[in-house]
Structures are given as C-alpha cells and as structure tokens.
Amino acid sequence: MRIIITVLFTLVLISLPLTAVAKEGPMELPAGSDKGADMHNKAGIKHWGMGHADEALKHFKEASAADGSLAETHFNEAVALDALGEHGAATMHFGVAKKLATKSGNKNILSSPILNGHLGH
Image (cartoon, rainbow, N blue to C red; front, side, top):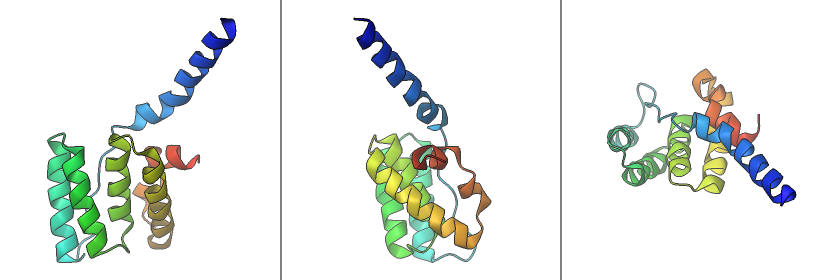
C-alpha cells in the first residue's frame, strides 16, 4: 500500500509543471506572413479564446499548411494539441517550433514554459 501511495504521489508531482503552464496560448504570426496562414491563424486564435481548442487546432493546421516555415504556426498547433491531451503530437510540433524559432531568433517561443516543459529544457 505504501508503494502505491508513493507512486501516485510521484505521478501527481510530475504532472504539476505541465498543468501549471497549460494556460499559455497561441501567438500571432509575424507581420508580412502569408495571407492565408494569417487568416487561419487569426481564426484559430478566435476559437481558442472561446475555449474551442478543437476548432482552433483545425485552423492552426491550415495555417501550418499555408506556411510551415513559421515557428508560430507549429507552436500554435502544439498548444492546441496539448490542450486536447495529444501530448506526443504536441511535443513533436514544439520541437519543430523550437528549431524554427532558433533560426529566426523568436525569444518568446524559445523561452516558452509549455514548450520547454514538453521538451524537457
């Protein structure tokens, strides 16, 4: 019984950092971005604000399809995936976002608590 309680307590402690930063939201695209990507990204942010992570994800996927070279599109997909409990896919997109943000120098993404929580940094 003592082992079970210890294991459960450990699992709760491990999950706290991700739930503490789970409130982080999507980002706007840089000025001059592809118009289609920007349109879908704005629609995704609107749905995110209404609490519709599933609808937001659809738009963020469309934004990534329109311009997958932007760190923000992958970051936004990852945030929505995380909110939907799809942590494996979220981690993959956070990894791509970090790689692209490193190239572009996007400090907001590089210092993101939720991104770094998923990537273990």
